[in-house]
Image (cartoon, rainbow, N blue to C red; front, side, top):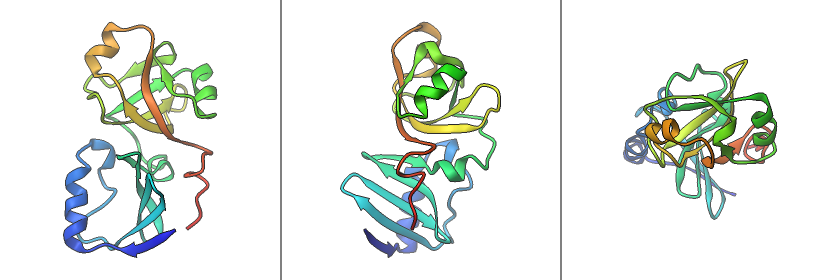
Length: 158
């Protein structure tokens, strides 16, 4: 693993990339941010030694351990218990398991996957559909699951 602090101007550039409400409060321009290259397609961005943002396959995602301590009000899908079990084993989110969603979701932007009862984040990924498409479609893959509770990023020790 390659590990180094990034310059303040690079932190500002990173903040521009994080244009989703899911990242609110993750970073500020004054933070000392450390970048850790995990492998060729994955990087972690740490504040005070804890991951707050991951870059996975070119997509920026909030770190799930950081996200579970927050209330998610935008950019989310809520899944039923049956879907949650599969998602926690790495499955992508399929439309039949989605019981609620933010109608303002944008396609190819990060979303939080929440459990129906607790409304807690169990995964983060990239929505393959817009909010309008969720309203129209009843089946198919709608969220690419890139980070879920219990995966290698969840267990990552830095």
